[in-house]
Length: 499
Ligand SMILES: Nc1ncnc2c1ncn2[C@@H]1O[C@H](COP(=O)(O)OP(=O)(O)O)[C@@H](O)[C@H]1O
Ligand SMILES: [Mg+2]
Image 1 (tube, rainbow, N blue to C red):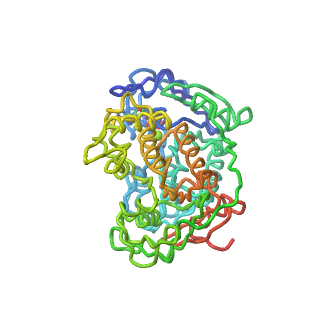
Image 2: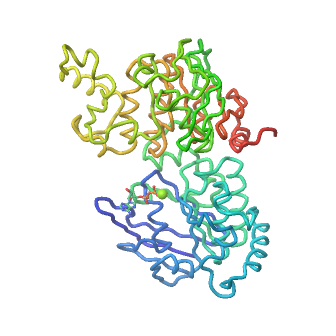
């Protein structure tokens, strides 16, 4: 048993952990649940010797220990799978696992390591080729190598920091099978996630962190998604958002055989055809890096079209500049909101009128009309619940969720009837995400045609009328929502076509 007692950790201007008690027992999966910034990673980095706590102590089997470094943690049987993997891409799986191993394994002969790798892989369902180079592996496979590495170092306690964030649903199912096996072998697991259905499925025990403090301790049997979300956010969260079925209207955005190059001259979008009707959300699901960004940029005129066509309301709009695309009634919520959505050094007010400031009512006879601008901005800040001290506050000082609200307020209030929306809730908290979803449904109800591109499969399934799946630049399939199960879409996301 491992106990963290009264852990406090301060960073300049923020208390990341405050008086946190946390226990890991062998043979149990203990979930740490909380929004972005709640302090989950900090607590686990303390356990792994990456940070020193300002207050509090760690006890292993009843004895107080000081964990000074990751090497120290590993020697005490603690392993950690980080959000970002720490493997050497130019080495093979076996070489990565061997790296830094001492004792009997520490020789240059990889044969015994390969042998044992095969055994351990089989035992825990961690299928991976020992001789493959890391750079050749998919994300899910790299994660298996990280777990194997920890097992080779005899981890009795294994911390997994948001391991499912990078996985497709079938890979999550496989990971959970592995985790259950590790637990049944008597290891203690810490599972970090903010996906509530996963937490309900895998946890033996759940601890909820909010703003660095523990706000609840519970078990799945006596919780629901609603009760967990309420603890996490501090107020009730609506899950049963009723997406009313209604008959969509005419095609507004039509993409035909679109071909677009990526930054390295690669074929990023490979003959994609899609259409979005008025009052409809078409969700595009896919693992990051399969052409989603290039697709959105090409549609909005930010990236050249190699061949194929884009029509807005039946009028060709391919290869127009963004300004011209806007004038045809399209708005865009980009995935890189800090780079492409706002100018951080500008004020909130300036960002809210960024695209419109050259037109009436904001200018007349070439002069900016500050009264009109101020009235409009005040209205938008209220309507879209942007939390900002003042309209004159620099945008970069707002939280991610509030910056996204500024982008949404601007893009959704300019009268556009075709919306291209990329990764709208990535990296923002549950409350802000809920708000963004409401706004999207509001636009849908008002008759907008919405192309929603998201790596968050739950979001796509929750919001869309139809789901298209993109893999290596191609649309694998398009399904009506009633047929788009997580498993079916997940398989398509991995490039698997037949059942
Ligand atoms: N190295 C650091 N320096 C300064 N602030 C940090 C550092 N690491 C985390 N924080 C802050 O501590 C808080 C908790 O962060 P973190 O533990 O990463 O949260 P979580 O993993 O739950 O998303 C956040 O406000 C974050 O900005
Ligand atoms: Mg974290």
